[in-house]
Amino acid sequence: MVKRILVPVDTNARAERIVPVVAALARDGGGTVRLLHVQPVPRTHVDGDVHPMSWCGQDSGDVVAARVLVYGHAQEEQLEAEALARLRELESLLDGVVVERSVRFGEIVEEIAREASEFSADLVALSESRRPWWRPALARIVDRLRARTSVPVLALSGGAS
Image (cartoon, rainbow, N blue to C red):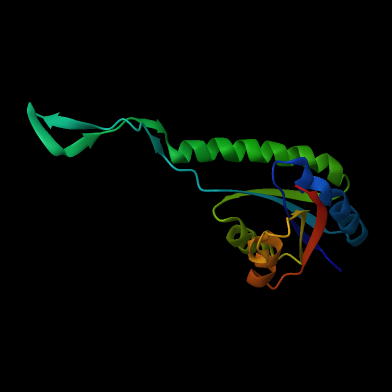
């Protein structure tokens, strides 16, 4: 019986197709669902126009000035708030189920595996889109996740993307 189900979701509608399936599993078993959203690590963006700085009136080729456009940590806070709001919207599909939310930043498979371990998940359930025949199998998140963790992975395949 699955008591702790980790559900990685993206921001598109295809990714949330698994949520009603997970809701039924969790309701039948009295389980807890943790919705997870993984984003790449935001980077600090600087203006591409970099100028040499003069130091006390003398030109120094070693010191340059760049204008910061967006700080990575500020962007991370904004992305996290947006992702948590999106995960709250999915809670309506999980009526009657204990729901937790989590947002992580990093490489998607690595972060899902870490979250599964920290959450002590009994099952990882996610939606995947069908890949073209020429796309390498190793690129599939589901295959990489199954190789990375010992937790069972339930994948709901959707239509071609």
